[in-house]
Image 1 (tube, rainbow, N blue to C red):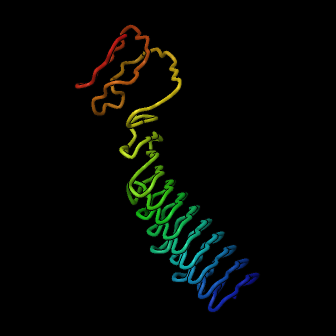
Image 2 (cartoon, rainbow, N blue to C red; image 1 turned 60 degrees about the vertical axis):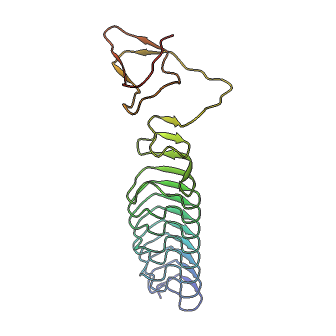
Image 3 (cartoon, rainbow, N blue to C red; image 1 turned 90 degrees about the vertical axis):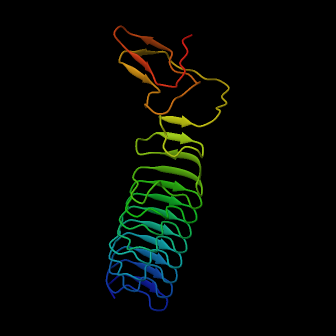
Length: 231
């Protein structure tokens, strides 16, 4: 059915559409979209796949894809367990992004990564069973294994290093000791009132704050419980 399609295997689609390539048993059997490549037993099978320009490889991969466009889904059971309508996602790994519905522009790599995300967009999760913070999270980064993290990033584009950090408090938040052969910091003029710690969070002791040239009329407020040393 359709035209300009290549279809190889028992009970494969498409029913309509053009320029599709389909390999496998019962693969994309109700497809109506165009310019898709689908390979693997039962891949893109359960729903009528009307989206275009998708690449789906793996048994049962993308089997609930409907209107989704421009996705790359590779791995057994990847993107399989929900009505999948999101666009421009990159999904690599067995059972990866199993709950994804309308989320867009996500990158999930690793066994069962991104498994809790449904509507969230623009997330990056790398590693076995690594998930963004919530089903609807946007613009987050998580690299690690299961619930442990080497690197995290939040929607304010702040980065944390350590498994103990779930929400970074600064542009670079490191929990624990940092070993550097050299550390340089440029002096900064404090020309507006400032608080320490800058994010207003829990008390912070140690580390480097400044050096600052405090201009006339500027107030530097030290948070309760924090230690601030003038040298």
